[in-house]
Amino acid sequence: DDCILDYFMPLTIVLTSQNVPNSDWEKKVTEYFKEKLKENNATNWVPSLNDVPVHYLKPNSLVKFRCMVQDMFDPEFYMGVYETVDPNTNARVLHFGKYRDVAECGPQQEIDLNSSQTVTSERQTFYCVPVPGESAWVKEISFLTDQARVSPSTSYTPSRHKRSYEEDEDMDLHPSKQKEQHMGSGGDIHGCVEPKRLETEASAGHHLISPNCSPPLDLNFPLPGEKGPACLVKVYESWDNFKVNDVLEVYGILSVDPVLSIVNNEERDSTALDPMECMDTAEEHRVHSPPASLVPRIHVILAQKLQHINPLLPACLNEEESKTFVSNFMSELSPVRAELLGFLTHALLGDSLAAEYLILHLISTVYARRDVLPLGKFTVNLSGCPRNSIFTEHIYRIIQQLVPASYRLQMTIENMNHSRFIPHKDYAANRLVSGVLQLASNTSLVVDETQLEQGQLDTTGVHNVTALGNLITWQKVDYDFSYHQMEFPCNINVLITSEGRSLLPSDCQVHLQPQIIPPNMEEYMNSLLTAVLPSVLNKFRIYLSLLRLLDYSISDEVTKAVEEDFVEMRKNDPESITADDLHRTLLVARFLSLSAGQTTLSRERWLRAKQLEALRKVRLQQQKCVNGNEL
Image (tube, rainbow, N blue to C red; front, side, top):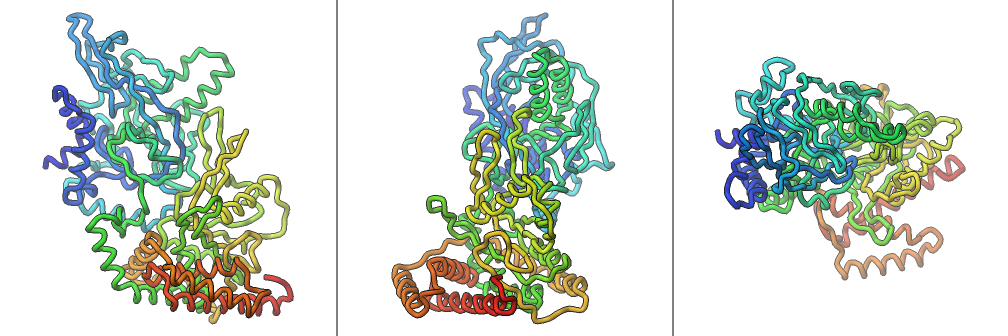
């Protein structure tokens, strides 16, 4: 099949395009693959680095990668066009360097560095990691979708666990016939090298031992215990469209040439600079040019920002086919909402009011910013949680099953004092060192305050708590660049579980009122997830992801009615009704409308929002009377 052949030999297509006289070959390559990937679910035929270990993939084949931009390096210069010459015959050959890490150099050829044909080009390198906290169900469904359409011969899967590059593509990989390209803004061009082949298997983990590298290579994942590949993603055009923390899907040419490791090690060993400068350069080089077997390179042909990472939804909701999907789902929204409400009510021990607010929280999103104020954030503090980790742990497990990306932050003194929350710039390595709060947009962050015990916060702990508070209030994280702070806006759904009122700020406190006390909490919570059908669970997942993406508006007529209603409320109860109450009730009304599939506010939904808020406040008042202090 020509189509499959194209996927495994994209450089053949590139070379064919280059050989057409006076052609705008770069544009043609991009257009060719863009069209090919639209055909018959073709994207599902392309092997994904999220699913397939890198040593299973053919070097120089077309791959895809769903990832978050963790850092962006300085622009990199490379030889876009260069000429090789045979010293014996003086025969000259013109080469193109795009989509390659290593320059082609035939057995009897040398690169002519003084050729008038040489063109230096520029590309941008992004350091990309799998989406932090990506749920297991997202990985599983993506994997099944891709695998279902892989050719029966499983062309990129070896018959044994590990396959050498020679078996994969012997003709493409001859280090003795290749030369290192002009890499990095100050890189040198090396002569032909003849290294022994290296095959280093990357185990999935945070730290990996790389050849001749000490200390171990830190893959710089934001969250502890994350697995998956990190990649150097090389972008050739429109790289200004991408920034740190963006979630991308990239299609490009996989480069895992062992030559890269050899040359990088030689560069590091042979450097003859000032000793202090040498240390900085060596550290930066180690981080920016890790062995390709551990951190593969992808030379991007196509890249797109993702609105979401839910594999059950169309990637782009604006297309015609997607509109049909949306309208079909919206027509059956009401029973899905009712089932989800029932499911969450059981999870919250029979408390249907808390379940209502949890749905509103899960579909909330920052839809705009007015000056510094993020509009649409809806941080909920679920207080009254039992002081044992079983309940809060299982609430998190249920959320994990519903949303595409999440993380449970256990707020212990130990974690506060010793975790790295805020990303900071390491100037020696010239990279951004990640932290727990470097998360992709729409990640659910569950902060478990029931774990908090007595103790002293040190300076790090105070900074971490402050950063959490700023994230909740302003939906931003101030990254530490030593000499200054740099503000990174975010869109993170924060749910705080606590016994009493949280120490952290929140938009809405809901006090849990259990209607049932299960004799065995573990058994009760486990049975909830096993009882729900996978098809129903998938509907919940679509429901929560889709409603976040819908537009919403309030008509002038309803706005006027709401304002008049608020004035009346203030007259009746001037002491307890504030501007904050109006803002929160409008938010509840917004998400209540969206949760019912309505994209505009009706009188009915406004009254229901007021009713929910009244019930919530009565609860808090009752609890305050019981405890004699403010919750």
